[in-house]
Amino acid sequence: MALPASNTPQAEKPKREWPLPVRQYVQRSFAAENSIPGIGREEMETKLKAVISEAAESNSLSKVDWELLPLPQQMIQSERVKAQIPVNQTWRDQFSTLNVHETNGFSNGTLSKKRKSSDLATALTDNDKQPPWRATNHRNVFEDRLSYADKRQRNELDGQGPNKSQYSLENRKRRFEAGANTYTSVQAPPKDHSPMPDVDQGPVVGRSQELEKKYFRLTSAPNPDIVRPLPVLEKTLELLKKKWKKENNYSYICDQFKSLRQDLTVQHIKNDFTVNVYEIHARIALEKGDLGEYNQCQTQLRALYAQKIGGHPTEFKAYRILYFIHTCNRTDMNDVLADLTPAEKKEPAIKHALDARSALALGNYHRFFQLYLETPNMGAYLMDMFVTRERLAALSNICRAYKQDVKLRFVTEELGFESDEEGARFLCEYGCQNFLEEREGEVRLLTGKVGNTLDTATSAAFRKVDIKGQI
Image (tube, rainbow, N blue to C red; front, side, top):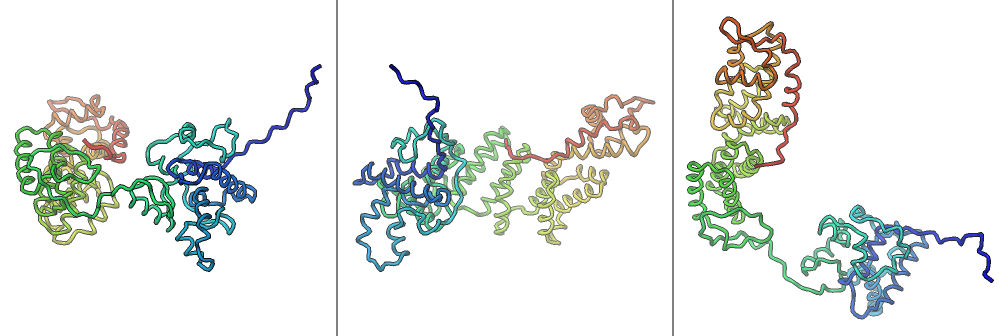
């Protein structure tokens, strides 16, 4: 006869959520690359269980720095050699020899805190009710429960994240010197020794004789066999200038100039030729409206001009002023103005840029568009990038100030258009086509009826300039 079922359900043992640092510590303990010959799995599991149990019983799971705590196999190894250390040796000497002599890491208080990478791993699944020390030794089981965005996050999850403490910095230095990419103790040497490239080997001396070369972003030390020396680069520049004048293919020219600049950089060449290369590339980028590439060239030119090695610094300082007008960057504009000398302010290009800035600051659109038509060098390409918004702002002022109408010719002259046709096209583009009226043989703009038609377009034109992308 079957026994009656008990009405009282059996009390289910509550599930314990282990902190993320503890789970990461267990994962590193069973990682194959951290195994130490001569220390068995059962012995390591016993030690791991003792360490975590002691921390749990003393309510110090969250206080222990599990990332700095030695792995169980390291603790066992340390205990085996502990008898060889003199009793009167100081704690600091023992620390430098064996990492840490304490087997729990919290018997004498907590270790220093550090930034954790807790956002790089997901929590354990609800079905996982085993304690951490019963976890499998195979990494792929843990990997099924974790998601990695990239290799860097995997490394940080394995305990390789940045650490500000002196111990971690020294430990990291040893790993890189040994060519290892995994966590290793100070005592146990890395398994696979592979020499790292010498980053202080000095500039590369190119040997390539090719005039044209596609640009590739460097991911390792440059190969001298594909780097062109200075005499070849000079010939390359002459070839590119001829091709640009003949073919006007910006995609090809930009790629070749970036490759040329890269060869100059890896060979540490900084002379008047370098300045010339960056200036030519910056002018071509301006002509094609490629602000991203122009900014890269302008940044390098500032550093080169500071070394007084030639070039046209006043021309590009004027470009910088116009560029900051375009981006509405008042902070950098003030820095540029503060750096200008009295002599530089008298230079035609810089004086023109300063006058344009002053006209906009005063709301003198009549003067601004006169300056727009008289822009020296290639500043007109920069002014073209923000002249539309200034025309919209000036047109709004005209419509509020002049009643009831104005001649189209007046608008053309005040806003710096080359012809009445261009001015009429601009008005139609921004919704003023219904306010143009032909009267007595003249086309007139009915300013009194425009009202708020231009407000939306004007507000959109003055939004913050985003130049993250480049052609």
